[in-house]
Image (tube, rainbow, N blue to C red; front, side):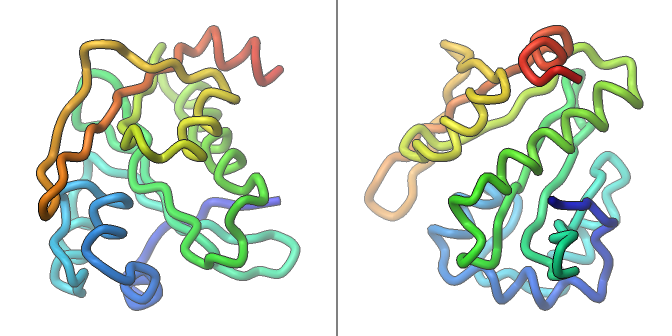
Length: 170
């Protein structure tokens, strides 16, 4: 269905075109970037060795349809910046395939026992995808961001290796 390939400088412009406004930027990336996304920000982003950054390739056509990241900055690895950039491919289960691919990489190539992520509480489709592979919301780990005149609440979700292997039959 999908394949993750290293995100490279030649991919920068594609990612830039996928992010249409400040709200989309924050939903996709949190506070790591400022809108408008540019080559300088992406160059700095890709130089961070605590991140493993990927483009998402649709195997059947070879098209690059998305972006994702494994972040190893903290004691628990984090799934970050998951985006199906080509809107025509959204709501087809590809996000779930990306999540499974990232989790399989962490749990089969490292000794980590847990992975987490952060998602805005109003992003119901993403939360449902994360729950379907075994993530659970961690009460008490919410963060808040002021976006224009609104306050956005971000939930932290976590999954253990054991739960992932049981639910996904890996």
